Image 1 (cartoon, rainbow, N blue to C red):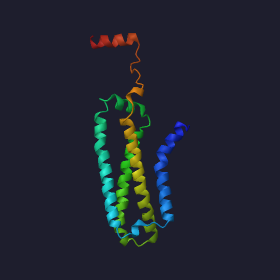
Image 2 (cartoon, rainbow, N blue to C red):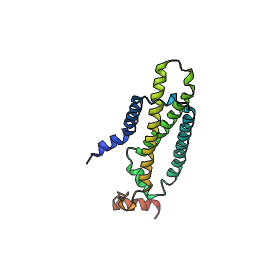
Image 3 (cartoon, rainbow, N blue to C red):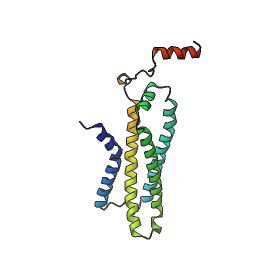
Image 4 (cartoon, helix red, strand yellow):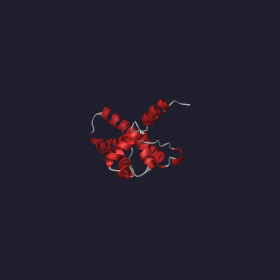
Length: 177
């Protein structure tokens, strides 16, 4: 069985590794979507997809936060999520989406880019950022789904109160009980 530390590291970096591997693989096979006659439609589709996903994540965050104090499950998750993974994953996904939109929109001005090396970097970034955004979106949604469909029966919610009997009585007296 893989240790928890290795699982954490893998979960944090797998979108980058897979995106880089696919980008290198596609580039080795001379796949260059920027040279396609339909690249403008592809860019519009990518920007639309990015906008929908970022908008969805932006809309779901207030819903999750609004039930934070009402739901035993959500309270449990937020107390157990010491590293703040959900926050990190959502922040990364939104950031990658915005970068992907910028890179995708820069493809529209490829005809005025004179430097051939800049076009090669743009092609790599175009592929890499799109794949990275899709994978990080999957990671964020998988994390949210794990939270939503977690089994309440398996959660161990320990008593928050660690005060002794005398301390509790003293507090109740001060409150006027």
